[in-house]
Image (cartoon, rainbow, N blue to C red):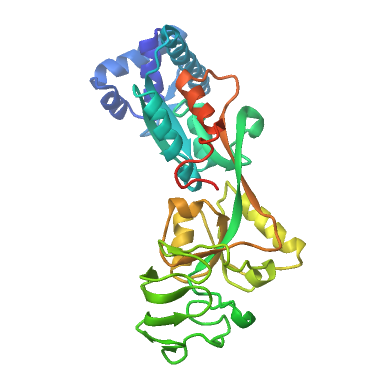
Length: 381
């Protein structure tokens, strides 16, 4: 067997069909079928079960696939290492990230590009399992992820460089929480029991202004949301938010009153959770349980974008890392700190142990350790 045949075999094993494998390899089907027969004859074993519509690997074929893939990875790493001996910095740097960490990338990528203009980038996103698989297949060299890294095999397989922790905050529909007088939260325009708190919209009229079709114009909305401007469709326009500036529909400012776990437990929650990544959800639920509280989780979802969209449309609140709003600056969401729980999301750079890292990957990792490289534009703060 030669390297060309190994590549042919791995492509057929991946595709499960000679036709699609030949198309991917840019060759005709008969020569590829002949190469598979020659490999089987040379080894004296059947590599494929041809009884169904798709080719399935026999136990011998599966073992050859595992070993062959490893040999090709080692060859590719060796070629990369040899080429880098001349001192040049070029090629492609492949980086993966979970969606909630993508705001960390622009700054380091820009600085890297300024220093090493002959290196281009290949970026991908996915959950921990998908990123772990891509690291194994050498499709990416580095992953930026929440910790612990919940890929199969455990964290012991990986080198991890921690980055600054990301505080978990409460994200709510803008104006949903009326802070004055200790009023309870509103949910989808109404209290959970159908009541409207004092000072909220009653009969379409708001204090200091008129609510018409969901738009408040020329008045004051209490609750630290908007003053002296107009709110239209969840956007703050032409005014200041009490307690800080309003930016992109998100209420910022140090004066925004933090919320307690007890207050949040009374509000419908949207929780970020998948079948394969559960640590953040369990950490938040444990904080409620330790305080003797049982929150009302209306929805578990696997997507940060979906969770924030639901929040922006008044479905509920979400407890998420602060930096996600840099990735998804949706209008209609305000951010509150949590006063009685020190909840943090750990973040780190992840790569496989005992695997050669290209010089570009090593330099990229080093950028995150520099004083100006720990966060990208709009990253952790």
